[in-house]
Image (cartoon, rainbow over all chains, first blue to last red; front, side):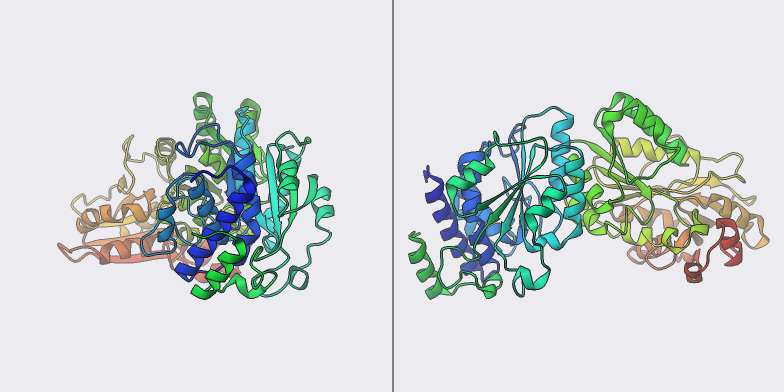
Length: 270
Length: 299
């Protein structure tokens, strides 16, 4: 399948994410939809990679730290020809490599995640490796907002800032819903921009569903002498009216009727 | 022990620029020479062991051989999930180096008593435990670690044995293989004390007592889940084995040998006894030698 625009790519990512989660009766569809636009822009416009050589030495490295939303990443990788769309049918099935948290056994997935707070330190290690060898490839890591409760992220941010790792981009999927309720009611993280700035990062805030804003902020030319943080304001369940901003879609999977309605709203038939 | 370790690491780094030494803001008067000689291969990660361990995985994913150095418990228990998920699951080439194994820092209190670390580290499928007890064992452990490309745990005690004049050890030995430390007078004896880690002196003292004068001393410095199947043949040679470790009994080295013994087709019955640290050591502070004496370790 040839998809040349990030907007169209994001629609297909959402559609396949919905289909995979529904078929597997899996969870985390809401978070998958909130990161679909970010993934579409990254894989269509920003990251350098060769899907036929997933371990290409000078590829950019992308780490999905919020590994529970891996359905969207698997869909993206399939749509970018790392493997076939048919492979997605085994998502969360017995014996499959496509487990329902990000798995490094899947082509194109750099790192297995699932427990939050692991992706950023790992990404920092990769950024140090690139600097140490004078390599030009860059590291992008996508975190959830609730994940920022984990102290390891702040340890890693301190380190990345101290060492001026400007080859590292931290993207926060700020959909403002956690597992049980809102971020605000769980553990307040505001003022988030100020926090990252106080840690020494270069921070921008964008609409995480606006592709032009995402392209501009993610651009590799847009950098200072410090790690970049992009706070992407997003909507959990984006694109499906009955899922948007509803905490239960952290867990529920759409039944067949709901899937049909959702695909109609996304505007893609599979 | 730690000085000999760092000497060997420094020598290796000369010809191997993939070596990366990360410290958790520890190593005063130990790591300076390495840092001075190879500044690009040295990182002080600060007092942040979770990040240090996660970063080590990231560096290892880019073909570095990373050593994370700290006092035992800090770079093991504090970041156990990073070791489990980031390093062991991905089978990355990271060596966790703990100094102060056992009661080396006994006077510093329970936070510094490394007496449950075997239980944690041997629960990871890809992890190899390196617990040397002699200078020769340190050298051989490091040789194996430099050759290996999978996760390792190097547990260093405080000092080398003082009561052992001539360790009877080969120059090369393999993971999972027992090595002879000291024979008893009765060379035909089918009894042995089997140690791991920096407890050779304790074993020698034991052997001097009449009760254990008929026991050879062997050590198993390189072990772990991967090498369980190699133990059967070695266990079967003996009528009696007394394991000795500066660790609590639960989940430790003696437990490992018992598990190995329980899964083998027995040729004969080997009696296995465990000698380990008394759990009351957790609530007691003192010099390592005093603590061992007080709790009748290796008696």
